[in-house]
Image (cartoon, rainbow, N blue to C red):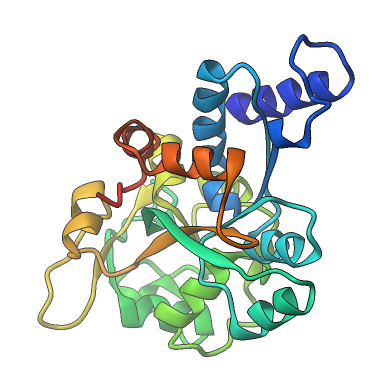
Length: 283
């Protein structure tokens, strides 16, 4: 969070004339908006990039993948960060506004299923997790735990993580009406750390950062699979079943500062930051 504030502060000072950076040229200013899962990573990239490019001013904000894609469609962001693929209807809306969305895979991520450290449950199958989130299972005793009600935590529908989790784990079925929709990943982490019988899902980087505040469950893909704890190695090898690419979307073929920043993100230096932030490099 401190890094995010620092990035935004730099941009604010630049726009108010309180810095020596030249912001009169739009070519020196880049807006990056979207996935809350990717905000931490994008902020680290932006902060490192600006430390070696004194002329560049980068603004990173979250709000969800859907919010970022909407900003791309409306022409109010240069780069959309998204934890899901852009939908066909969104591409058509962008094209109506004169944009031709270009996709860039910049990292990979595992979705960790987390519970309170006091919860004795240590592993679940993908099917069991799906049944919990669809509302078929409502008590921990139904999945080998104690007799206690399950408190379901989910991201809001504008989140790319919400969409991906629904497709991969819920088999595209509806979430339970009892699911509590949380405004951010950090809100899920906080609630799980305080509520003994809650369950949530978060990006791998956030789970690593939370450390002992939450417990990551081992996930079993099917009856023939072994339980797998989410990790960089497990995502990279394909062993962990709840994983996905992370994207940048641009309004067209990137040029200028946009291209330079994307090139940095997928370079060896940029991918080192991916690993250090708790995500999985693409190369």
